[in-house]
Amino acid sequence: MKTIEVNIKAEFIIPDEWEVTEHVPDSKFPDDKLNVLKICDDHYDFFPECLMKMEDTQKVYWSADEGKTEDIIDCMSTFNVKIIEK
Image (cartoon, rainbow, N blue to C red; front, side, top):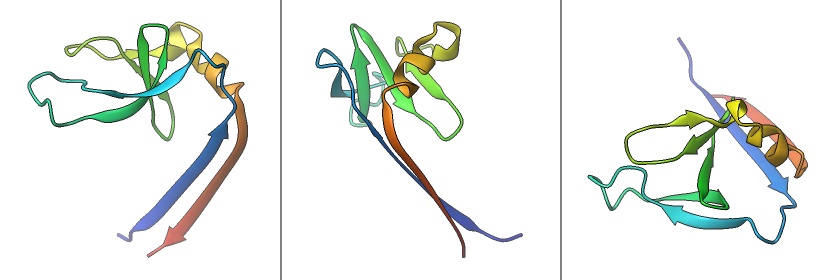
């Protein structure tokens, strides 16, 4: 087994009404805050293969089912991936 490091950098040009905000996905851990993308009343976080919507503290929904992934990806202006074997 070996270790690799993957750095993903993307830039988005988003509508003015979208915002980056802090979100606490689980109220049992109030100090575990994430910076997420807020669209209307929905919170979205980024992961390497998917975009996930965190609707409440008990459930996680895939935004691909709601069409938001495509809307957000359409705002991407640059995307770079760097993979390093350690």
